[in-house]
Image 1 (cartoon, rainbow, N blue to C red):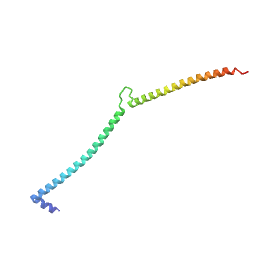
Image 2 (cartoon, helix red, strand yellow):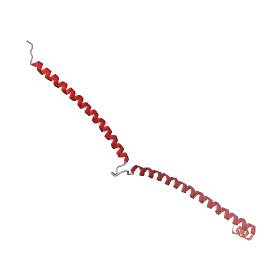
Image 3 (cartoon, rainbow, N blue to C red):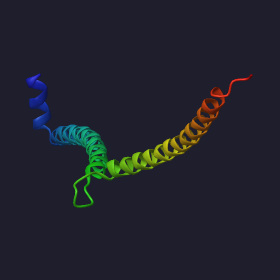
Length: 122
């Protein structure tokens, strides 16, 4: 093998072919390394952009926009619960009125029944 290299290096054209071959080898190697690094960088860039997008979502979720440091979502749920409670209170008030009317009518019936007990047929 060393004899082949010695012959190549002694011949001017052979030496140039050797130089061009070595240059092409390293050029192809550099291109392959560059493509591999670029692929890994793109993958890392995709992961980074996804992480930044998720971070933006998280920031939006925990962002405080008023003095009480409560999240907007909690305020919305509080308003919904207050509205629901107001509807329930309205229904309970209507039921209390209905029960009051029935109690009044029952008391009237008791009074009528009480007044008729004293009357005995002869």
